[in-house]
Image 1 (cartoon, protein in one colour):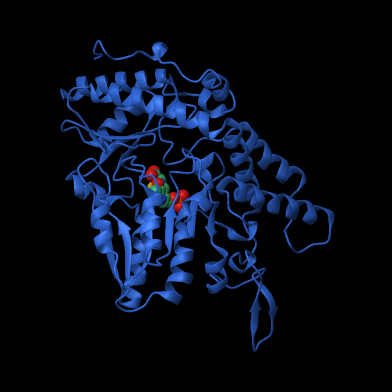
Image 2 (cartoon, protein in one colour):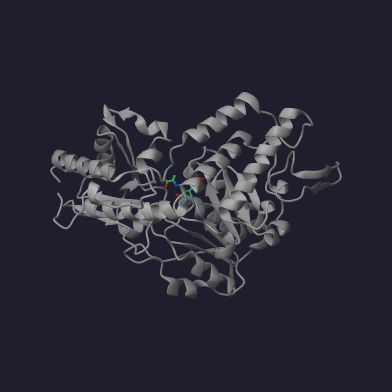
Length: 422
Ligand code: C6P
């Protein structure tokens, strides 16, 4: 299966400071066996595993800190409020936002996009206006805008991509016109792995005064995000993809937009005063956080962020680059494999088809070998349509994956070939 020029797991040199075995010790779930085989978890784009520190934070919270926030004067409420707001400060630093008031806690990327659609979108987008998205969006960044377009009589325009899965920036430029009121584009594609030139995309929209939302769901775990440097107007990500709990994420928005936007939901905590005649709203960010929030998971997400920043993005990016190179070589050398998404700039995702074997069969055989990959359309049906396929198998990496796990994947695919005669 290996060519002469191919490197083996042990030959690969990684930054001396990056000790993957040491890192794996922090993730208890990785020690388990699945179907009698060591777990090889390659479904990190769906959700990442959690370090012991995040599990400990959740336990500590429920054992000794649990209370509602922003409400009580009692000890526990003050502790919970302090921890919750401390986590907001961590997200602010993580994204390099200029102010904690620009960080709004939401359930995840999906809710963050829907919040912007329901508030900014409903207020500022109208009949015959246009919203630009790209051909590689997750359904979360397609469907909300379609709903808005239907409601308002606006139009959705789509930036096309080439056969490698790279956006065509010249075509993007052509789409921007006096009707364009919003651009919403993914930073890193979950089904292709493409890292989009998001700064350029933002600049070109800004030259025409158009605000831009960045779907950072897949970027936040692989790249150092700097919202001030990107100059994006909104940025969303999910905590569960950055080694934190599920059901929590954050929306960053520039104050100038958040101030102008109506509230998302009505309820407790988002008000400043209520009478039957009139309600006035709370200041940022609370205006957008109605009801009792997901306190424990906000705090847990803060610990996930501490963990990933402790490992360091410089080391993560360098290690994952090597891992992706090694895996791309190993997988593309298997006869019958076609990698979907071969962009010049990629993060740790390899989507592929193997001959005529259905992706679900690939995934099922790999599962028997203890290897977890995702199969299907990955919530990007238009991407599958663009490449003329129903589904792919997708291996997606995190910094705790190893070259040996890539070798296991390659052996697993060899088994699939044997079984299906592919
Ligand atoms: N992609 C995947 O397996 P939520 O579900 O709200 O945390 O994230 C939605 C989402 C939005 N944008 C992108 C680019 C994404 O990758 C995802 C989630 C997972 O690829 C689950 S479908």
